[in-house]
Each structure stands twice: as C-alpha cells, then as structure tokens.
Length: 278
Image (cartoon, rainbow, N blue to C red):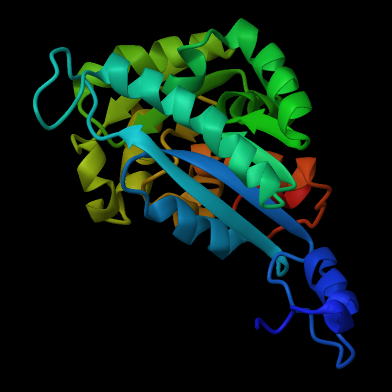
C-alpha cells in the first residue's frame, strides 16, 4: 500500500495535491506555487531545463515533453531523420497530445514551444489554437511565439537584432520570424552549430555574438538571442549593461510569460529587465 492509500490518509493526500503545508510546516509538493508544462521541440532537451531552474522562484516547477526536432534544413528524409517539415508537423501534433496529459497531471500553464513550430500554423491562428486547446484540456495554454511578442512589446523594442546558434542558411528564417511577430529585424548573426550540438555551445558565445551584431547594426535597440536551448541566461544582464540595449532571449520570454500567466509576479533579479521590471 502506498503512503497515501486508504481513507485515513485522504486529508494528507488533499494537502499533497493542493501544495499546502503538512502538520510540520513542510511544503510537500515541489511545485506548490505553479507547475509549468513545456512542449520542447528538440528531441534531446538540456539547457532549457537548466536555465528554467536558475530563474525559477521556489515553488515553481517544470514539466517537459520533448518533441521531434532532430535537425534543421532537411529537405529530403533519410532513414535517421525526417524532413524539417515532417519534423515540425509531427512536433505540433505531439505538443497537442502532450498538453492534454500535462493538464491531467496538474499543469497550471502549458507552453507550446518552438517559434518555427508555432509559426508553421500561422501567427494569425495561434490565439484560436490556444483558446480551443485551453477549453479542451481545462488549463491555460500559451505559445513561444506569443511569449516573445509580449516580451518585445513590454520592453518597447523597435529594431531587433537576432543572434542564433545555427548556420548562416537560417538567417533569412530568423529575419522572417521577427517580421511575422511584428518587429523590424535590424540584423542576424549565427554561430554554426546544429540541433544536436546545442548543449555543447560555449557560454561566452551569446555575449560575443551580441557584441558583433550590435557593432554591425548600431541602431539596434534590442538583441534577441533566439532559440531557447543554448546557454544565454547568464549573459543577459551583461549584454544589457555593456551594449545599452534590451535583451529578450527565447527561453527568458517563455519563462516570463509562463510564470506571469500562472499568477507568479515575483521580480527576478539577474536575468534582464524583462524579469526584473515586468
């Protein structure tokens, strides 16, 4: 018999599920303030989880389902990797299924991750997708794309330069993504890694690329380290103070919108204006 089994332990189970204090004053459930569900596009997900818990106030936890993105720019499927379009379509379908299970598991908010996955449905359709899914699963649903748009608006961004971890062939995609979100793209720089290499990216690259893109595009007022799955959180404050710009990283924006949607209004220091002021 499990510790919570039996009629005599119903009150303890209720405390456990609701995140209340037990008789000794200890909070039993880790996510007693908010539980955030995240549908993570990379098939192997690492840095997002690490940065989430660097930022998260006590009592806020993360649920993760990894999706189907193994490589970008694949036009013809192989035995090992499907085409990029197939990966994106499969990821979208899996995220809808994952949202249902996360809601059943008690998620306060579910994030449908991945700008490419979100925007493949059309930015204009995302509100309806979230509203319909939220009604179906019974919990709040947001997207990476919505999170980044809201974050850029909160920061007052006008001219946004993007730094990303991939090769130059993806520059145009990042410029188009920024335009789709309603902002002017002032420049794009990448650093040549693949999806499977994201956890290997040296920590200094986010700052190095930010310096390069600002020097090349001095009218930039906001720098966007794109992709929520490489090391960027540690560099946010230094980029903002050294280059006198706003910073919106994909991971930071997702985290910010998710916890605010869940009703967590803590001002978090150390990770930029977005979390400190809004």
